Length: 331
Image 1 (tube, rainbow, N blue to C red):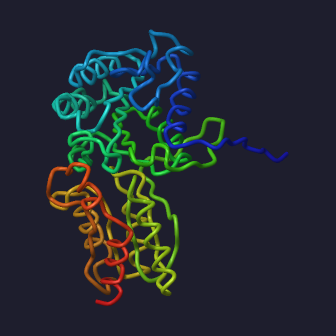
Image 2: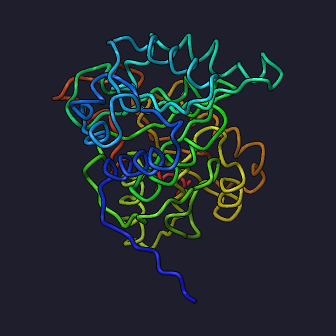
């Protein structure tokens, strides 16, 4: 008998809501908390309707204290709950950094496995929506340098729901980054049923022979557009969506780069200390002798995210990525 999966067209933020609803329905231990997530349904409406559906004891508002949100969630997780904590913007997470670094990520190690922290931290991130500075930061590298936490970043609705469910099922902390500019920019088929996408696995979005373009989150559509423009000139590219930033999928990077011999890394975070540097190290460690040209990075500048008039000048564009592709091809 053939099983037919029913799907529905959702935006990325609707898929995130659907993922939370799925797990709230399945497991009584799941609770959702954060600033304005209850009655107001979240600043971006990611939790819209969940409190009405599941009650104030399972979807509830917190004081404006990121450290308190994460500290409380750690206690809940140790004691058997599965908290999904929202930080309104990734740039607001800095007061909670100590709780994450000192306690959430170390509890399994500290207690020799006696306790774990099955905590999901949801955080919208990135520029491109004309939000002020701090609201627009892309500081994922602060957390990919933190053993004990997984960092996930979907770029489309299908992956958003599947990765969020996997994050809630995970026995350890997961930072779930949500690209702000993609919240309502894309729609896609999302299965109505529960499904999981394995954390730690990247995905080919496009295949080619001449160069590898690696991106995640809001930079994936930018990378795809540049690859499409390159194809018009006879240059074919692998485009890889990492999906998980830590632990990173080293195998897919090595496989692609060893085929193409060229690599372009795209991220909107500042260049210095960015995750692109780790990807270059992976290529160097696994595939140096296959390389036909130096690796190119297309990143944000080493500045705070500028205000509205200059914001787009800081974010990688298809034109900048295409230029990088030409550089690795013509080296």
